[in-house]
Length: 50
Image 1 (tube, rainbow, N blue to C red):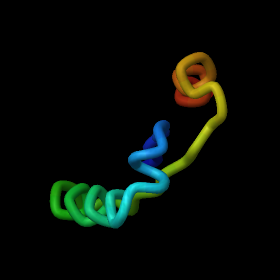
Image 2 (image 1 turned 90 degrees about the vertical axis):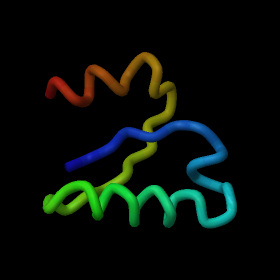
Image 3 (image 1 turned 45 degrees about the vertical axis):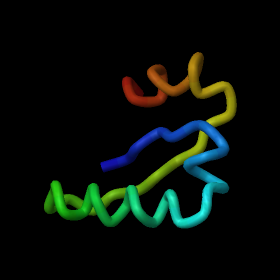
Image 4 (image 1 turned 180 degrees about the horizontal axis):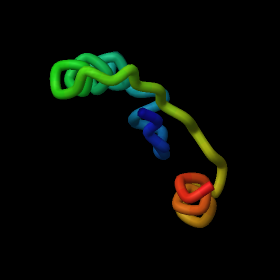
């Protein structure tokens, strides 16, 4: 499962990414991955379709 993330809080906030990752792992059995895409608001949805 790939999550497209944007925003400096997620990528640079103290332990924020780690906390989100732990929480999502509790909610699903799937392996998860976080991806950063520049101009996510425009390209993020298109990447999900492909």
